[in-house]
Image (cartoon, rainbow, N blue to C red; front, side, top):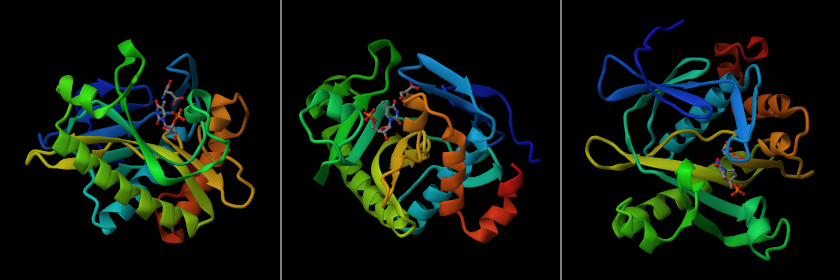
Length: 249
Ligand code: TMP
Ligand code: ASP
């Protein structure tokens, strides 16, 4: 076990962020906690943290290999990622390829309708206001980001969508939608942060359209952790699975 962990900086719904000896780096620990419905539904599911850390670090590495700047440095333990420290922008950047989830509740899209071009939506990461959807004018008026930042975030998000959709499609999964969070690094570049896991994406089997993501838990069904384990087995190479002893987590 690697022991880099120091003082707790931030406790989220499913992850903890720790200070390290290096001011430019923070350690993100993925907990086994899972929540839905704005924190109204909560559980602790053994192994979920490790599976999400493995999936996130793999997808961040795939993005880095394709020229997308991410916070990820390396996985130091099976549920702990060492990352570049970022000044996070309080936006949830949601990208949608297929109409699902809240989009169907709020707008007259057809279920499973393909969205070409993809929809990019910005929600305000703010529990007090229940993460309301924003537009560019509101974001700029609130001083959250500039128009240039938003243009940049849209371009990076579309690139991430292309890279990850292709990577997952080759492995039989549809990237239906996902949520990203960005921050500024010490040189003021916009960098992808946080996580990309089945907690923050909708992943469907390309043939059967079965879910492999948090919707299983949101719907109150069993088997969410088994589904995350399947995603680990789909995205990791056999060498990576051996390295992290995935079958014995
Ligand atoms: P939605 O359909 O509920 O708006 O969710 C769209 C995508 O964003 C879905 O893949 C789940 C993800 N998401 C989060 O990661 N965190 C959130 O708080 C919400 C609302 C959605
Ligand atoms: N992340 C939110 C919550 O924990 C909403 C969700 O993902 O369903 O409550």
